[in-house]
Image (cartoon, rainbow over the protein chains, first blue to last red):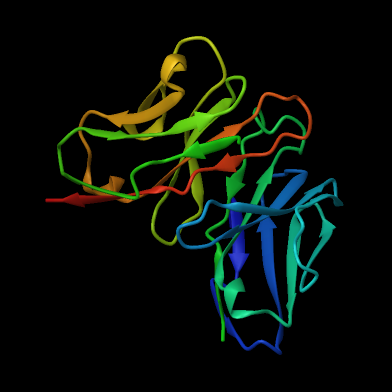
Length: 116
Length: 115
């Protein structure tokens, strides 16, 4: 595997389910990101991890819980979601969090989440 | 308010025709500027970026973009499109505040190519 991979690619869940999204990067990067991509809206940055430490939480509801056990893996734990949470969730990585302008972000293909 | 705008939601062009996708920004100082492409079922890929210097920037896949300060624009162009260029294109900015930099994306332009 190369680049940034995400599993599963598609997920359908009920509002009472608990599920997790997984992201893995094979680029030796130290920063990882979760984005939410909803139809007709700009990509929204959700969380940022730099060297396994969470550095940003952009007012994301607590029903989304990220976890970064090491620099190569990032999880997004989902619990008691709402239908409006249905979206494409993208993971990205970069060399580190400093100077986003110089550190290109590499994106995974995303997980298409549908909440019923 | 600071923002990045892509006025065209959907553009259709014929294969072999030229292409221009528009991007405008509203920031106090010129931000760093980027164009990303998202092919169906794939993540975003960086096409090109502008920091300073030559206002015409060359990118991958035959794309180029021109920064025009007077118009606060960073339009993406390609002289002759190929069917494989069908995708969604996102303009993004990073404000030059040297603090906690964050990529801010436009809403995207979906490009359809007709034979």
